[in-house]
Image (tube, rainbow, N blue to C red):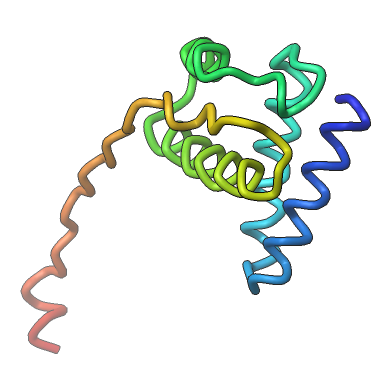
Length: 115
């Protein structure tokens, strides 16, 4: 990961702290962006295109909820990066929607409900 990436990711996590984001969420989002920065082959956030981001996502072998989590991280990061002047476009706008997996109902057994 380049110094430029580290600087921008650190600035973003500072922004998240200022917004009162939970430490666990900040850690997870920082790890998501650091993984991207290490493997995306872009020297800086400003060099990332929507096509490159979509191709990178396509190469990942993730479960649906993991993919949703990473997409949410990227949508938040790139919106902030654009607003903060770290890039000229928001490449995350090119990412497709990842549908949530429907949960499996686990109703309480009748005898426990009556208690």
